Image 1: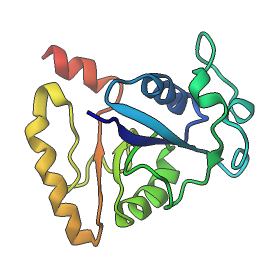
Image 2 (image 1 turned 90 degrees about the vertical axis):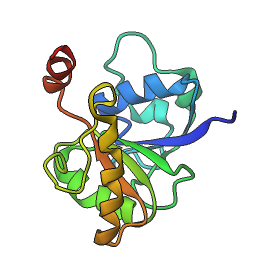
Image 3 (image 1 turned 180 degrees about the vertical axis):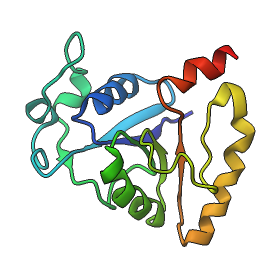
Image 4 (image 1 turned 120 degrees about the vertical axis):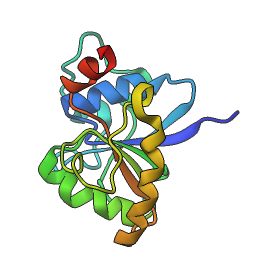
Length: 156
């Protein structure tokens, strides 16, 4: 089975760094693109990021060029680590362009047509994403719960 090409939006921030670390050697996904702010676009990821996690950044990502957070990425599945105010503007644009976005932002957590997924608890809510076609989107956004709600929900 070939790996699914993915990108991380907001890859230079702390949440983006965690996603980069997890995706760099993932058995199902191939990290093919990282995006960042105007400050880091067109730089090597290794030069653009101030790595805040223990250890070094994954070597496989260090020479990637930070791309603009805009349509044109080679991946169809995007893991978004964008801050809420950026996510509110960028994620709909990317969904309209046909991308599938797994968002970490709070922006769409309460939207009626955006599934808030904890796979171990409510994976059956995923088909709700089809409702987003009414927004004129060719892709869709799926969100996760916040960092406090996830372990609490799993425990319950």
